[in-house]
Length: 198
Picture 1 (cartoon, one colour):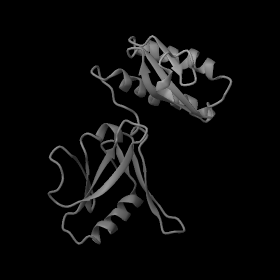
Picture 2: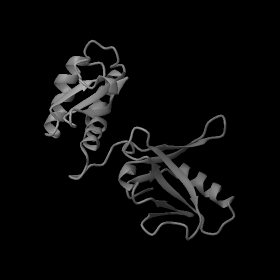
Picture 3: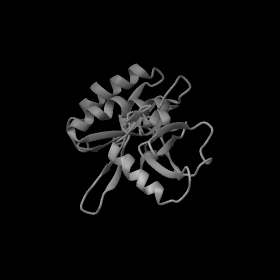
Picture 4: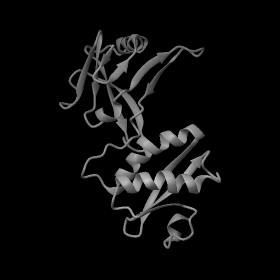
């Protein structure tokens, strides 16, 4: 059963119905939200939601036997999310996959930082992931015209980082964000404001 863009699998629904029945509260549902959405530290959360406790702006997903309420602010970050229940030797656990929870949502008012993070997470990191690598924004220097990035995973110490940085990442970011003049990584000692990265 899929509602809005969140899928709650039949096994997860069954598990939740059982869990909610133990709460002994008429009309008890669950509320789904993302903490620190749009950042690398985003976490998908689910909490009990007693009848009447839901927010007026929540999106209600009616399932058979219970309702799930989606926090309005979290909604775009939960697009294509899948909540599943997988049985294992220890009994089983609810799993929550939300591919967009860490991707910043941007519009015209977004800051340069938000825009850089958006492209890093939506376009650049998925490509680096095939090499087991990733890159994150550490900060902006020189009046926000130079983005300083940090490579991790398979990209750290890789001899191709310079090529990746110049050919791929810098090209993409400068094209999308005209305010940027240059992209560098934290090991570039030509950055004047070096103390910032120690």
